[in-house]
Length: 488
Image 1 (spheres, rainbow, N blue to C red):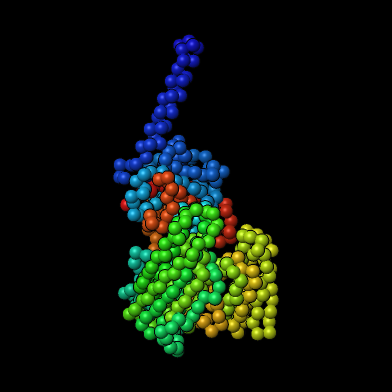
Image 2 (cartoon, rainbow, N blue to C red; image 1 turned 60 degrees about the vertical axis):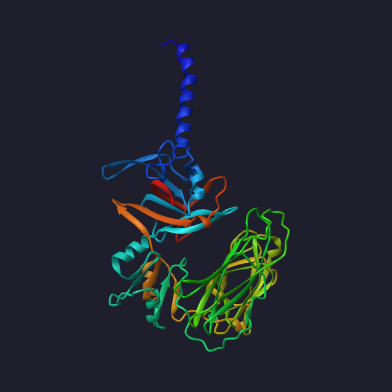
């Protein structure tokens, strides 16, 4: 073949290649109705279901074997790796499942999470995908209860099986210790408190909070009323609905309500009228209940009132305005602080009795670590400027009299380490149920989301891996074979 003929064939070859790639990028649905990224293949970053990378966080394509099966793969070399599905059918699904097959090369003490885009900007709803610690628990200890959501393990082999979560909590003793995975919303509930049930609101939030919060209150009789007032900041495009749930100690939602967007989904930063909602749950048992306010950071909680004299916030507080928080701890506690604006630079005063010390917030958009000292008496945290997000493992009230300890036994936030379990005399471990299969050192794990909880724009949904390590490192090396997305 002479040079001129070869020269004429080049455009035809290029056209054929582009046509082939276009066909591959549109025919993305598999025979079983799923959408698969064959990681390490030549199409894994070019189709409408694809890896996004960034490329510096994934290796070049590699090859390996699973038994007699030859596979393509890439190593995920960073904590966060992104992938996406662009497909009109995604809008018709009520449930989205994701399966990943990967090699169990996770560093000790790490967990594999998966996130789906849930709101504008960088907001993801994170689910636990795989925790190697739980597989070890399965091998060494007795599982005394399991359902579709959670597993409970006893570190005492003589403990009998429990029929349900309520049965487990009813038999737990005050001197026993349970370690609970932080993502689980169940809680043992407090011992019975002395008090009274009043028809008027007894506990009131005396500050403005921003975004999602979880509160606990104590019901003395058989009903609970909650009044809430919200206001949209309108800093970001998109709807700003909030969901309010009253949840029992066994995780059952006994009442819920939604406050819709204020009608303005633009980002002009103008405040409109506040919106109020009233919820009343009846037929309750005396004891502790959670009030979960699921809102994004474009939402303010202007007012919250409950028909009880007890009200505390669990772990996280995003104080929009100046406030005082009250808390109690017998151990030193690590607390993270972050502000995104200069108005939030401030000095926080922590006091208990005659003891006072300061924590200085002097950086913007940087998490600063503070240390809360143990004390016998109630402590107070004075936040003079507001605009501060606080993350910890403590409970906070907004008046001294509304504080209470919500746990009737010793409850710890689970640390995935067997030496830690022994050191802290843990009797029970409660974890999210995992859906996994193991084959020749490779794991296939699955998690799912409700479509209503996610942010789907232009028929596209983004996902992210998140391999969290106990030392906070971002560097990993986890071989991934394929990613499958299932719409139901």
